[in-house]
Length: 300
Ligand SMILES: Cc1cc2nc3c(=O)[nH]c(=O)nc-3n(C[C@H](O)[C@H](O)[C@H](O)COP(=O)(O)O)c2cc1C
Ligand code: SF4
Image (spheres, protein in one colour):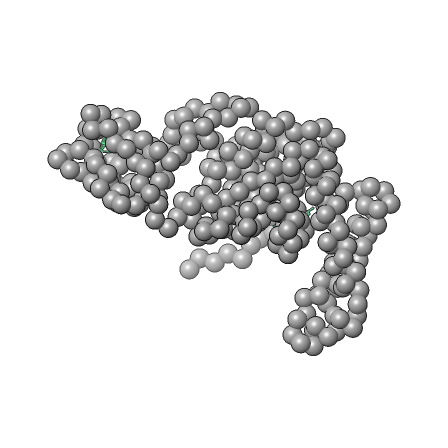
């Protein structure tokens, strides 16, 4: 995905070291008469050149410094060298993140939500397209409105799956999905809908007071991967901020099948939602890290 070149090099500052050429993935820069010069006609606009330059001679116009400034903490704008971090602390943070399904009835400040989105932007994206979107539901009321729309679609689908003749027919023509759904989910979904109707229990968003929908815009080379990588950064950062999170796969499935629901929230045509993150102040506490099952692991 070729992109317009927005790199600028100040020849007065450039010392000709060539470091920017070495890290540039799109061969945008060459050394001409001992100075770096923009000679390519496309650029990933990744900012490697500006990050590596010892003289501060490079700027990349398409990068927005505002996206690296945060409201709830201050970020030292200096690159952290390889290995220069508390690995055990990082892994502890990762292993301590648990899907949170109990939240306090307390709003999440807008600044925290806005910082979380900016943190999501630190993720890599295919061809550096950064064609992701973030839709922030910033109050419990907005989350509830989304939950009831999603719940309505799930209720209809659950009812449809009760038709034994339809499940049988679809299985006969090689489409077993409805029957599989019925066997695996129908009972638990019925129970959850019942609890929602009779006790107001929110089994979808678990009472979260905010949610962020992470999507992709048309043209992204790796839309789902980009959105999910951004989501991963946000889940960890939320944990560090003291917020609990839970991915809501049901909502993603519904939004995939009913793009009109996402459009009601302002999504553009062709925009797709890949992750829905419920978040809020956790009303649960753990004592220890429990680990995972052994994975399929091979050394080839
Ligand atoms: C793609 C995806 C979809 C998920 N959807 C839901 C969901 O709809 N509701 C829910 O309570 N948890 C959901 N989860 C959370 C998983 O159940 C959870 O990650 C898993 O049980 C491991 O627990 P942990 O996140 O606490 O480590 C989802 C997780 C992923 C990765
Ligand atoms: S890294 Fe900076 S100083 Fe070195 S060649 Fe590139 S622009 Fe010039």
